[in-house]
Length: 190
Length: 397
Image (cartoon, rainbow over all chains, first blue to last red; front, side):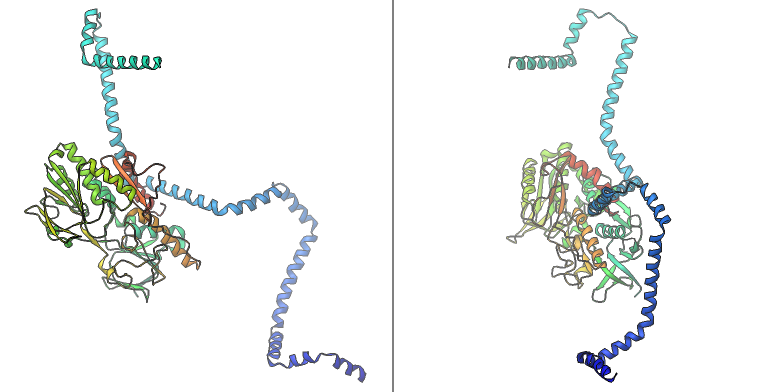
């Protein structure tokens, strides 16, 4: 027995003993021992989680139920790839969404800002007024012409037509006709 | 310390409001933690004043209450800043309050020195002396132009930085157009006396504007700095900046662009550089000495034209860089010196100058913007004010 103990003591490397004699190492060992109860608790928690995981994996009924539910979704390799692609494109998409958000907020702001809408419509009216005025004048002219024609039906004589030809408005119109005819014949000649 | 905020913004003008709106859009947690310090009751969209002076817009459309433009979530302190203490991270207001901050944004604009030209302050708004640079007097510009019966119509550009470098000549082009329509152009001599060496800094637009000046038969003289007005005699005195000689120019009406300068409370603060403007890095807009301080807009020492369009590009850089600092990540936003000047060359005509630090054109539209266009005039008159009130001041544009 004595021989055995001697052999055992001799089997402990000398380096280890000197390490254990190091005050820093000794201090660390004391600290480690002090923390052991806490470690044990934490290990117990990890063990609980592992046991729960193991129980879930062994619960075939539950697994089947989840598999069945999952099978109702179109989740496959393509979906997963799409998700990854989407993640990859997210920075760009975020920029676009931000721009869209800015535009939406801008439009909402205008709609809610009476001063701006009044300003916009009053300026638009400035541009539209001359056109509307010209349209009104043309319409009034048409109405008047129609009324006169209806009120005083008369036979148009050749002499009246000759008189029309002298009217500056008719002359101007005829000038356009003449110019159009000239231009058309020139183009045809080419 | 009377109060302390995460971000304090000095100035509730275009720059200050834009930055506040952008910060609040980016981080809801900043609600009620951003203070805007400004003593003014009203906020003005000043680019419209050119058209007001030319009789093409109403000045009331350029005015809103300050309350209505302060972004929701920002705290408005209606007082003025008197002192900065960047080492201790606080500002002192005129009424003695001490306001602390984590981040400071200096956006207090540019100060008009009405007293810088002898005789101007006393005569402004009377005796055919007008200026578009005051809400109070901008109507008088139109009154002067409308009632003009011929003679010399004199327009000036001072020897100082100005807000929107093109504005002094825009009103001249509108006036010239009106004189033609009113039938008094033949008896009118339109004269432009500018302290600048040329009609515009950027070559592409300079060439276009030189043609406009020739076509409109405008007499343009450069390096001429207005130093005095004698309103009773209707004489303006200019100094030639090269020869230092003085010359008198008789006028029938004069539109004056006043001298402008850095606000005195900035000029005398530790934030200023040797020229008096807020000393910021030209790309990050971060102060060159105080890393939690940013500056933008007219009061910054950036080597570009001081315009609202420049602020539109500066505001997101400041807001994003501040957010980066808050999140302890590197600042990645950079300002390239973009500025823009919609130069009205007549009723329904406009050259849209856009350029960067290098004075290279940086045009947005898919056509040559050096050509006078009606569409661009409509954009300035009808669209830009809407974009300003509802986009820029809301932090979306």
